Image 1 (cartoon, rainbow, N blue to C red):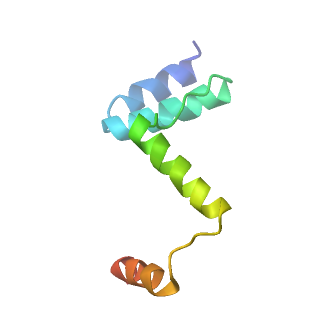
Image 2 (tube, rainbow, N blue to C red; image 1 turned 180 degrees about the vertical axis):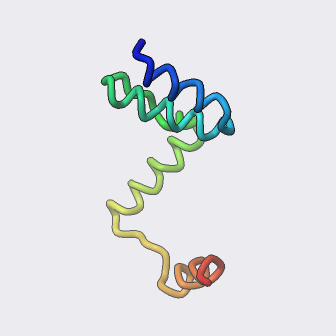
Length: 75
């Protein structure tokens, strides 16, 4: 290991766990050993599949409903 990489790893040890994980993901990506960012649960996979099926059938939420949801987060 180079001195620079060793210094970077030592510095990263001082960071919060979430930042350490992000640095680790970036490093793994750079060396070609990507890891999934998030592993979906079976329930999440089923929900996404249902959403994709609805989109394929062009079944979308009414504009009013979408606007109501967005208004909760708009500032």
